[in-house]
Image (tube, rainbow, N blue to C red; front, side, top):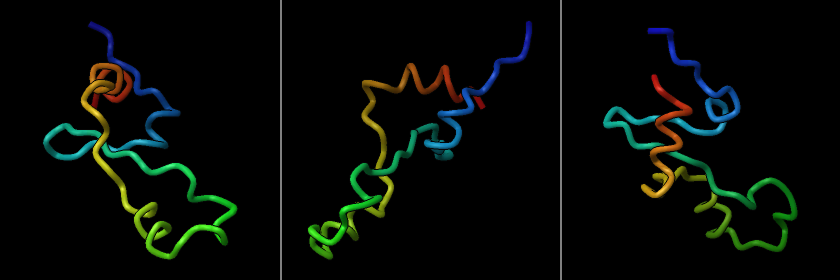
Length: 64
């Protein structure tokens, strides 16, 4: 059986937890930040667990 290849784009954007859940980052935190409140910007910094709907694709992209 050949080795599975990791999707390099996904590897740079997502992280797997110890239990196999996938962590993603929020959008809208790069530019035009002056119009956003301090609390909103702070919440955008935090990572969040990805929706389980997309988990089969992610498990294929990040096998290890």
